[in-house]
Image (cartoon, rainbow, N blue to C red):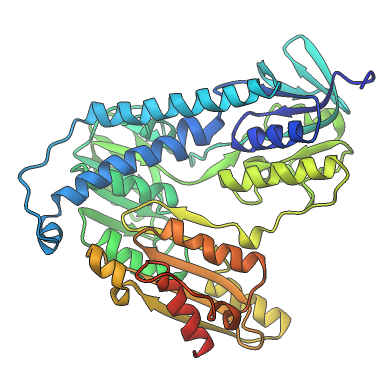
Length: 460
């Protein structure tokens, strides 16, 4: 250690950096973490945490206003009102608590927290302001930023990204949302529950392009069509001008005038001005830092994890990558099994998936010479879902016909984000539907939706 100030220096204190720091300390590494902005990064401050708080509150409003649904349960209530400011404060308070808890957990373990912008300053060296720090190993986890396409002007008030949207500073009567991925879907859920009308603009020729086609089709029927959501598909928002009203010029010549516009067109890596040139690293054309399956860059002792790598832009994936990087730093060979990492959209009802979509599985089958099969089971046949009067949704499995190996699972329905982990564990073990069909699930539970799907796949 005399040669270096630290065993490990981590640039970026998001979920990935935090997870890496905790694992490093558990393995006896003297560790420092550098953060230029808020501890917790995007997830805690501008992403997962505040958005889930808004979804929880707006979801309750939606549920309590669904009088026909409540009547099925024998419940009748009067008018439901809400306080936008209180909902916003709920999200803000949760962010503050999570940020404080994350910071305290690092301090308690003796991780030195250094505030400032960290840059690579040569092999095994990092610069923060005028200070140069040396470390045996360095992990870069600088995260990502919202992508704003050309022609879109932000003012943070009438035209904004999810960074500003999670603050819920006001409720526009009519809001356009550009993009129909996770972020666009979740914000459409929030805004429509709280009374806003939404116009969703998607550049590709179908909504929810990242989801399995069958799930996207059903999600459109459940989450889009019954709500105050107008959709425009296969058109670009060529120019967006803030103001009152916001003016949106579409590629087909149509001009929209709305109260606000949320830009939800994905994220780009935050890797500029990181000093990578000092060690001969050039990010790829999209700005991502290239790493191998061990999270190692092309430079010895320099690692990268999380959104900056573009491997899988999810907070929990970054945390898993951080653990893998530390394992390899400690001399224990480890890799990330991306196939078994689940993802979810916390809409009402939720969407979740793990593994391959059907088109991805078919491409793999064509390349490797095997056949795939699919099966579906439905929440409308599940006793617990019927008891909850929440029967919209299905579970879809994709598997190999020859071995029965589970390749992908996709769920839309109540508590889908919780249910998916059973399938995630199965894929991590490369389990067969024939084995899974023999597992016993408690009755009546929502997990029986997957149990039914396994049995259908195995013809049990």
